[in-house]
Image (spheres, rainbow, N blue to C red):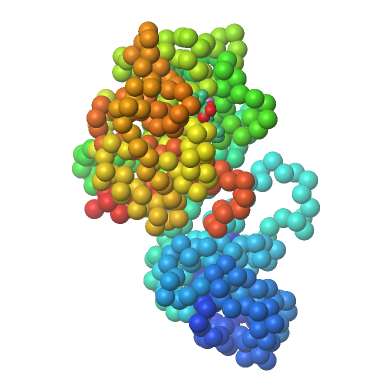
Length: 491
Ligand code: BES
Ligand code: MN
Ligand code: ZN
């Protein structure tokens, strides 16, 4: 990923120049200087390319003169409509055209410093690549962008706006790395091990293994784990940023489903596309990246992140459909379908979170149901909550950063669907409202506390490029929940 610098407006004498342009603005400031130095070639080139500055429009001019190898123009749409997400998308749009350049200057002198920072964030987020396992890629095909210098009228202001964004981007990259890792590498133990890196940022990291979890009575989580040769883990990450030296207050809690691979267990999934189930730990990956983001920007809040890490495998020791497990809360569950494992993992971790950390509220994230993809596609995560204020805040925070969530209902009628004949509940409620009955299941473990559940099965991974993410792991939720904390729970 490139380094981002903010500099005073000055014309580069070589290399690539990026011109973010709105619909109404003619070439002005740095862009105008560049055009004059190039003898009007930039204006002529943009005219020939029919570049109008429309949102998402790009044009590349090669060697227009003035020593420049390349000018990349990106359209930002109407100036009056330009918000942070638009500037980010504009930044994202130049990551591709700049991939083969070592350095680029962005003529952002026409943008407010905060928008210049957002644009830089977009370049950074879109430049992400997971290439740890490529060994034969040709040198000329590798991305080369090392430094992006954003020229702005107020470099100090832009820099200050960007500093927390860089921390959040680093958190996003933590998540994307974890979610992209193959499942033979990222076992529960390995994922837990990687959480330790957060101690460098001042996060307290505690890892619990099967022995500790047996003591805590985690019958549901351990039931999922029992078919796998890879032991489960639970990781608790604490960031106490609210008041230095003082006793921390009630924390806000984030809880992630971390199924490092979901075969379905004995209720095994079909072979086609099963490899996608390596990202069934995206909820956990998001919580880990979120903790990195919050600590990285020294958020003034007390936050605890918990992840339940297991592998769901079929084997001679695997749990069976029909098994009854006792959760940490004491409630019993008839396991009808071993593929509805995420809710079993969350049940124990949520209960532990309440008993041990007495949270102000809880938000869980989970790639929980295929049904949420049927309902909402890949454009919104499903948002379920017993607390209207919390739900509205999450929705608003998501909107502000381009991570949309859509509120879904909860209700007693749905809860009836998970009644069991022999236990307190069963772990599936049939096909109708499958995402809702999954949420009802989780709600039985929150003890009436303020809680929200984000079903991110449709948003954790993308099969196509997005404005600020290349295809692959999106880290959906990191920015949303960082914003939630920043906006409502700091200071
Ligand atoms: N991890 C899956 C959900 C999932 C499916 C995520 C597709 C991403 C893409 C989850 O553990 C699961 O298998 N859910 C079942 C529940 C069913 C058995 C009630 C499902 O959605 O089919
Ligand atoms: Mn499953
Ligand atoms: Zn799963």
